[in-house]
Structure formats: C-alpha cells, structure tokens
Length: 361
Image 1 (cartoon, rainbow, N blue to C red):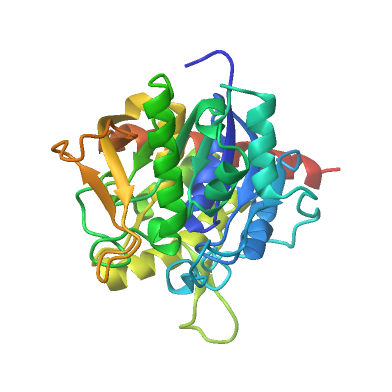
Image 2: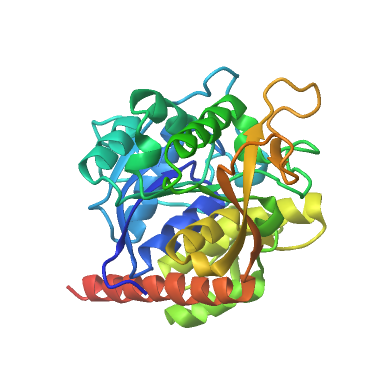
C-alpha cells in the first residue's frame, strides 16, 4: 500500500450501500477523504446530506466537509427509490440528527476547486447519478486532466439492468449526465492519450458482491460487539419490525440498515442478503488490483424507447473510437469482503472504545 494516503472526493446519494462505502473509506488507512458531495438518487440530495452528516458523526469524522450539489437531474424528473433503501435512505436504521450543517459551498464547486488546487492528485469516486460531475465538467472542461482518476459505480456492460432490462439505476436516473461525462473523457483522451480513463464498476461485477447475515456477525465479532443475533421489538406489535440490540453503535446501524436491504432483495432477487455495489467501487479505487478491467469505448443511450440509460460498449471496435472507459470485468470478491469486515469492523471497534471512554467521564 502507498505510504501517502490517496486523496478522495466521494460523490454520494446515501443510500444503504453508500453508507457502507463511506465507512469502508473511513476505515481504510490509505484513504484521505477530503470531502463528500451529495446528489439526488436513492433519496433527495438534502436527505442525502442529512444521512451523510449523521453517519460521519457516528464514525467520529466531523472534520470532513459535506456539500450539496445539483438537486435534480439535468433534463428528467427526479426519481428516488424508497422501496430499495427506505423512506430516508438508511433502511430501518435510526441516527441522531446531525449537529452540524452542510457546507456553504456547492458540491460542484467543491469538486472543481479541489481539482484545480490539487491537479493530478484527487480520485473522484461517484456512487450515484453523474449529475454533479456533468455540471462540474461544464464549469471546468479540463477536469479529466486535472483529476488523478474517476471511479464510478454505474452501468451494465454485459449484465441485465436492475431498473429496466437494460439499465442500471445510477445511469437510469440521469442518462444525459452520464453521456456528458463519458464523452468528456473520450474527447480528452483523443487530444491527450495520457489522460487516465475512468474505471467503471457495473452490475457485471457489483452483483457478485453480496453481504449476508454471517458477514454482519463477523463485523460484530471484529468490533468486539455482541453478535447481532437478538432484536428488540419496536412499538407494541410483537410481530412488528425488530431493531438490532448489538452493543456497538456502528454495528447496530449496519444491521438495521441492511435488514431493509435484505428484505428488498428477498422480494425481488430471491435471496436474503444484499448486493453492496458502492463499497466495491471504493475498494477498487483504493486498490485497483481487486479488479480486472477491459478498455472499451462506451456511450450512453438517451433517446431509446426501451434502452434509455443503457451503457453501450463497443467490444468489437465498430465505432473506430479509442477506449474511454476501463470497464471492470472481474473482481476478487472474497478479498474485498475480508477487507470490508476488517476495515469497517476495525472502525466500529474504535468508535465503541471511544464511546466507552466518553461514558466514564
């Protein structure tokens, strides 16, 4: 691992798996999270900011700037997905209201200004729709050269979609923004082949990253928490939702958030567990050795009757255009999950210790 931590900006729509991705980054010694920018996707951007601020407080990282970017897609009506992530985006989990406000800066300005101030240093990891990135590119067309790299969770390059038969959620929400971003890198690479291609982790690899109840128990053990095997009834209904009674607050949050996700996947995908797309993207940004990629020219369909939001990958070189995206083809899921347990579990252990010390004062 590098001696100097990697400067990261995370663009999120927090989101259950975004929450895990944030915790993964915060628990990774090679990551320097400079800021978190918020975009509408899983929930509205203002709720994303509330979730993100509260989660950072849970993790003890109130030093990280949280800024709201554009709150609606470029051209289309806003869609959110409460059936997937819950009405507030964090499943059944409860977090105290954050004690600090969002940044006075717009999230798009945060991205542009950081890239200008630290050229060639910052990795931008986008975990939601690419709305903020598209507007940032309009303000600063040099962004593909100013960033060290862009890593995104998005697209379905061979797999079926998870929103329509051809389309993954993040690109479905704002296909025009994705098209702007993909074409901006294509143009930059055509002018300067040394520009780093974005790395895209689509459903082809992220749906291999499944987290189950056994992983929550492993996280609890790593954190020194009581395994999450008992739940307390909420309200007067003994058959109603049951909340985690794990002794560690981070583990409680994870267990309660994931239970909603598990129930969603049980209904729609036939297994009691969850795909954790976003943590895999963060993990690959920090360690590209976790994935194997294929360099492809990729564009995004914006006018199709059945295919709007589809990532169209030119595997045969029919367009004659040079690759503009490194598409993840395989991922070492076992190594990733081991790291997730170690890093998030380790962070949870630190927070549990901090809470115990505070309670004795």
